[in-house]
Length: 207
Ligand SMILES: Cc1cc2nc3c(=O)[nH]c(=O)nc-3n(C[C@H](O)[C@H](O)[C@H](O)COP(=O)(O)O)c2cc1C
Image (cartoon, rainbow, N blue to C red; front, side):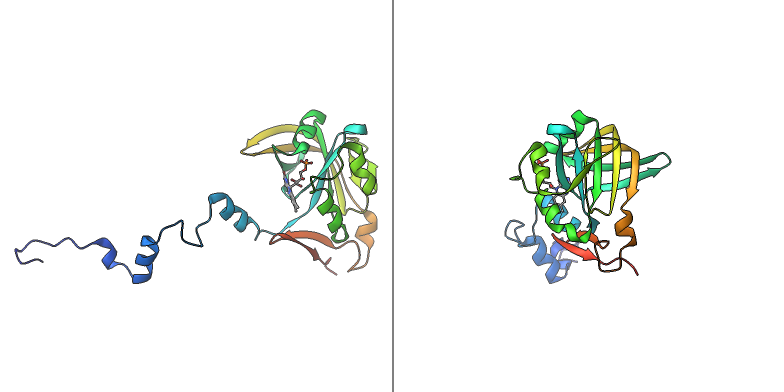
């Protein structure tokens, strides 16, 4: 109470612990912790470990491949998967025109393959596959990378708007595990390739 019997207005911040007060009064631009929403999401998602795939689409001279970790299964019945592709990626146009895509799930020994298909300086078209071993997918004609842990071939059923990416939903036409990799001993090529904290890692196969 004040001298005249009225309640004095107490600035809200004086009721706060000093540390919280300091946080509120500090300029967000000067704070080293102030990340843009994009940088904050990128940083948070770096803590979400994923597998690594190479998406492929097209056949003949127009085929193309791109490293992607935004890949997941959606439905078992009917079998469906999805992948998210940047609108700026050449892959985007390829999937839209081919109306199909294939997925090679990479093993731990394929780190260099993952780097290669993420490098914008790689050759375009069929020539980019001269650097790797591959086979033509039976259902889509898209290249399937040899030595991968598994492969999925899909027909594109829907493309959803996903901001600066498109979400491509695919009906699974064929899904196959690499029997050589499945039978291999622990520590061999059957280990998984993971992407975590901005780098590639090997996940040993459970023995
Ligand atoms: C581990 C890793 C995962 C990636 N995942 C995706 C993804 O899910 N979607 C995407 O659009 N780009 C992804 N990229 C980036 C593309 O691989 C890269 O931009 C590529 O050069 C695009 O190729 P393109 O423009 O020739 O199609 C990823 C890159 C790395 C290294």
